[in-house]
Image (cartoon, rainbow, N blue to C red):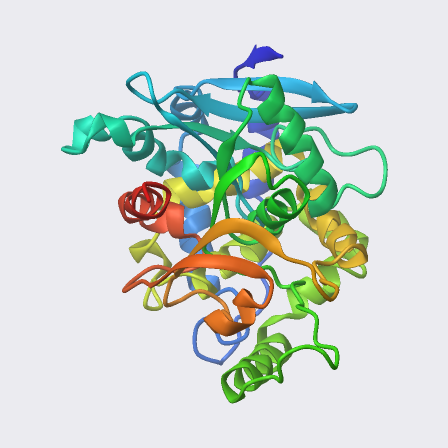
Length: 379
């Protein structure tokens, strides 16, 4: 395990600026903004800011203000942030991001989690925060073998926490992080104190055989909502888990294409009221995109969908995730199941309907996210 600092070569920054200066725009559609995908007017504004006002070096300095490390686990070079909480009894909390996010998703929430006394809180509520980058995301090396899906990542994270000296700890995740956290709780229940989710994994399926409870009207409606959502919004996921390489060439070569592919999801999955900058600053959006760009990991980040589809969270009769589980349901999250559907497998002991926020909860409302961690894990 070694300390790590981000230091992007100036030649890579110069190459990016060259590419940003030579964009060929498509003909703008006549539909309303965002109806057919990324709004061109927004993307032009983002590009103008990126090329004229945005400073990677300033953002790099901010990222490096968080203690970062690299650790070799089973042949995988894993990057992670590790911030110790105040006091002597801080509780270890493992946070796992998803796609198209990165470890940056949680950074705005870190001060609230690690030093609550600075914000009028009780230092006894502090956490030791560990934020790894998924394999093939950001500064974690791209896997050189197949099979590195959420279930496999769960085993890597268990070894990471062991190496840090944490025998028992809390886990939290949304998106792919929810899958990793669920696998950890299923495979290593004795190590997980409790699990918090702000999303239920898309591959999750409880046992529905003849011995199972009949599907309720509420559950049946949820399944119809998911099917409708998939037909309207799920094309990205279908491509990611079937033919990701076809898209990877374009996104790896064009920063504007990459920005379009990622920013559309931040717009669609957030509680932004149609204005993406209401939920995220341009600096944070571009920094997240830049991490994908400078590490050239968009291709490997999409491949985890292939691996997740090969080993889905499909549970057999009698299977249980018997770890105390809390769920926060943010109103602009992509379709979330009713509690009864989750309780078919998970031991849900906390379920809260939030009044604001979406898929990127920690990034969109960092203080509110931290308060939810205290509310649930403090129990």
